[in-house]
Figure 1: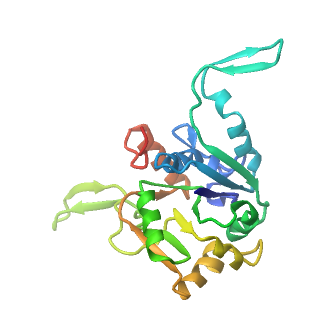
Figure 2: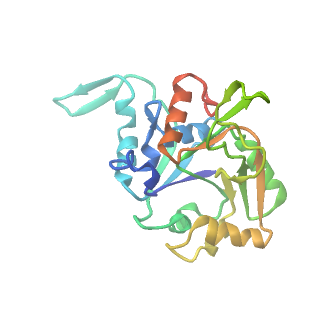
Figure 3: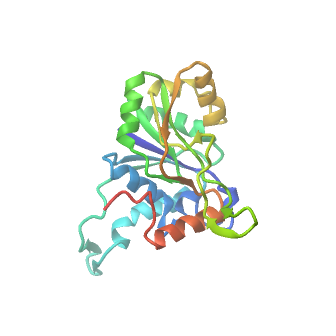
Length: 257
């Protein structure tokens, strides 16, 4: 099953980081968040990726083109022009890097992949969120209900940390980024049937507003509830939180060895 990753947006709220690279190439622990997302999928057996490129897509192409050569020791034959890596290939993924336009919106990028995706169901996510979601359970749930799509519903982390204090005002504890106790949002990590592609009118169609919301009104969309970890890298503060978690070995999305 192919995994589509939407990686063409401008990432305006991370503008300090996205001047030279697209948002999915912003690094967490020295590796792009796109790599982290792909590791989540590959660790669970889904290792064929279709990356929908747009803004500064050449940076993503360059990363994968040079991936083997930059990840380990090399022998370079200057006379013959040959390059021989010394380590085993770090990943066994198949990665399709597909240009989908600079100004194309999210659903429009999917439409541009229609012929490539064919008539099979596919997974879909955004290029800026990590999670420890059970993807095999998600897929099993999707296959069980027979609707056109499944999204992973998550409880977003609170924007600010909390305080625990006594009735007289004595601070007991600072609480870092608790999960909120109510409300669900679309966390990405979706499974979609190919029939959905025929419902996309063109490049100017947005995934949620123009595709998923109409499907929900038709009762053709289901939610897989994920109570575990999820975090979107939407701001510089989010990036720092993810980077700190990785540095301290406390990254819940690191489900691979």
